[in-house]
Length: 464
Image (cartoon, rainbow, N blue to C red):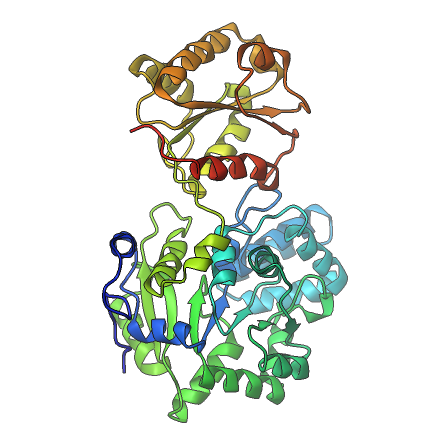
């Protein structure tokens, strides 16, 4: 049977703040099922974190971390460029990927390249020193789930857990079934079902890896037992893993299945598929809207759970979304960097001129200055030494400064390739916050800038 849904809190008399937040999240997600709220409240809910959550973080290449398919595509391209695959084999593998023969492709790559180079490639892609856990990682880690499971190789969830809880979380991989079983007695626990990048031999990627899991009765019994006792809430998960589906089907056949919940992009699955998932596997879909491919309303849904259950300490631990009106401007020779910063602040919650950087954004700045920089909180200028040699740009930002002062708009500089305040900024903008970026800066380098905005937000409201 489908789980009961509720559009109100578990207890009567919600505050105006909570009612406001409820109205907010219901614009973007389905109503939170009542039984799911009860499961979280009673420590009977386990979060299953898939690759879609990791895609909320950016790689060193400034693109979302890859899911399983993208990882195989990138691995094929890397092997071809390194001369480890010939052109014909690479073409054949690409055709197999288009046919969704993912396990076959992965197995071929393992046999041709060897486990060690593939493990090194995976470790480089998910490099923990350069990748920042997203706010969704922090929300998941701070919410009082009974435990966590993930099919991801990265350690973003563990790092987010340390940040919000100030302690480590115990974890184990599928090659340590006894340790996994022991961890189930703890609260919380973390099971890394398909391995960890720090333990190359634990990685589950290819056909024979899955065959090994499916023949390991101790592993399947452990997973089946977990699914029989706890409700799953699945984030960023595609339901494509044979081990998990086999255990769910086991319980359904025995009549011992409980309802699990899958967050899914609205419109991705049709009515027949939704119905069959519920009837055949007791998986209820909860849909969210996804306007720009960022899947940011996964966070909105989880924010809704936190507010429904009045878990005030959760939001106190998690970094704020930077919900401020911000524009980023730069000269054409910095377009790639400017586009990255623009996309970064949009993903983090800022209101911008558009969902993506605009080639004519300097013209937008001229227009904004002419109109008085209305409906704006921060004017962000991405500059380098060359920027200060452009007289037209200098004249424009000085006019912008005059308008900004009268409107209460902060002018912020992001300076590329400098380690101290340039003379021009020191002279003309001595009070403007300035942040220094390396030539090859990434998301991690923008944390100081982001933290400043978040801290400034706590100081009070901006202009109307």
